[in-house]
Every structure is written in structure tokens, then in C-alpha cells.
Image (cartoon, rainbow, N blue to C red):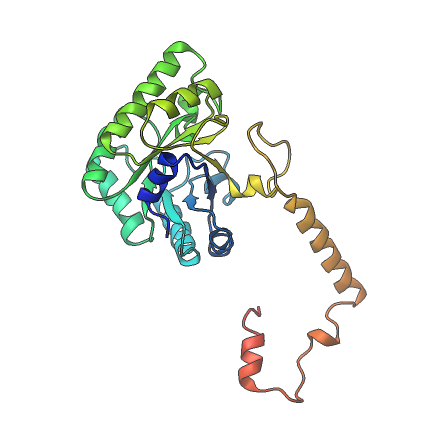
Length: 281
């Protein structure tokens, strides 16, 4: 099983590594069996699973449902649960309690927090009580209104200096890794070289130690124009639509179900029927 120490070793050995989001049992099992070392139960589920325009409406209850499902599906990957908006900003005590739920009840191995500043002290406290923390700087979706939208961060010297300073502070506070989202490649490379802990990029260029994509983006389940940083490794939205259309046509014309899909009284046993029908409606 991948641990936070393994992730550090990846950087120490110069090994680039992948992280993907997962939100349910089946996708977690598939990605785990594919050997993806880190699965992130991201609050991005608010957009790709629940249909919200931002991650802000996601609650701890939402995160708990999806995190529990993922932990039931994965056996080898390091599981990281996002701390949703307002689950760690009110007080350190609140942050510890909510992070503790993701670890104790939902089966996560670590949590991810967005931002620097006051998040640094929260990170320090969480690591003190034994909860590993992944930081997240740059384009931080929970700050979307403050940033005026989903915009690349760190383009000015002042922005870049602040992101670098926050990165160093998070490392000093005990964060075991750091997501860099939506920042210029040059800045991501500088931060990656400056830190002992590994960096994980999304829209941050090739110089980070690891890369992360949203599961639905990577598989082409999201439609429309993809963000510049996304590479679609499949086009499952079209394939699913094709399969659904073919199924509906087979039902309309009577091609499905065929004889091979029927149960028979000849040679059948109750136990066999129960096994074959386990996914029935």
C-alpha cells in the first residue's frame, strides 16, 4: 500500500507519479487495480458529480459519503480526502474534528487543504495530531470569488513570491506534499526545486514531481471544450451515448433481451439464480 513516506521517496528517487480523483466505489477499484498510487476524493465532486458550478456548495456530509465509497473500493492507493469549504476555516478545533472524521470514519489516509496564510497553522496542528496534510496553492477553487473566477495565479512577481512563501511555510508546518494548480510552469519549477516535499501539478507544467487530473476529464466524460491543461485519454461520453442509443434501439426492435438473457427452469438452481441475478433491479 502507498503511504506518505512512499510519496516522499518518489521525489527523492526522481520518480514522477500520477494522482487521479475518484468519487465512488467502482472507479476507485478500477483505478486502484490500474496501479494509480494516489487517489484524491476531491471536492471537485461538487461540479462533476453533483452539478454545481463551483466546489463551494460541497459539505462535509457530501465528502463523507463519497470518501467512504472510495475507501471501500481501493486497497493499495494512498487515499486523500478534500476538506470542503468552511470545514476548516472557522477554527483549528473545527478543522481537527472534520479532518478526523475523514480519517476515522471515511477511511482516508490524509486530507487536503487549500490556501496558505492561516491554513499554515491548521496544517501544523493536524500533523501534530497525526493527520497527514496535502497542501494546495495557486488556483484554489474555494477562493474562486476572491480571485474573480478560475484564473491562472502567480503571473506577477508579487503573486509568485507569495505562493512560494506559502509553499515554504506549508512545508515547515509539516505538509507531506503540495498541489500546485493553475500557475506558470516557471513558478512551479522554482517551487518544486525549493521544496523537499513533492509537488503535484495540475495546469502547472511538466516540472512538478507528480501530476493530477480529474477522473472525468481524463476519460472524456466531461463534454465541451476541455481546459488547456487537460489531456483526454479516452472519449467515454461519446462511447456511453453510442451504447445507450444501441441499447434503446435493441429494446425498441425486440432484439434485447434475447434467449441467452432468459432464465430457464431446466437445470437451474436457486443458488445459481441468486448469483446470476445479484445485480438485478
